[in-house]
Image (tube, rainbow, N blue to C red; front, side):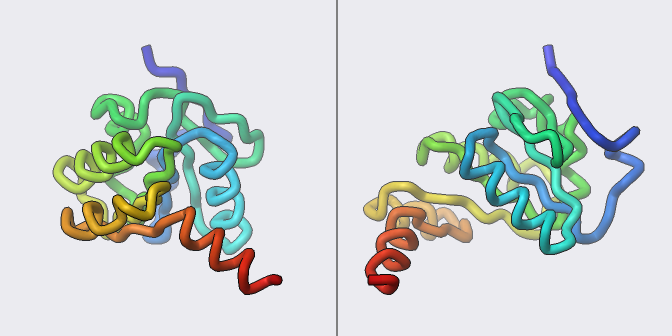
Length: 140
């Protein structure tokens, strides 16, 4: 069963060219979604848990096609895949690219050794570990 929580009456009626979906329901996903919303984008979170009162969300497995379809993801211009598992991120990103008409798929990678694998799969990959370590070392 899919649990849907949304602050909009019907998210499918609120489709915009700048629609962004963040897949994953943890603190990183929520932080990304909140930043996008602050920057003026229409954002929806899809994840096993969606603990944000400010951002519309769908509680469900982001690797399940029925959950993604129910969320309206096909109308998105950008999907950010940001679960805590690199394997799951790769699977979800490939599902989104092959089943939905999405302009851009961005995927977070946790292990720097896997970044090339994601790039070889044609995905726009951002290594969280590398970005964080670079930011910390530049700040010091």
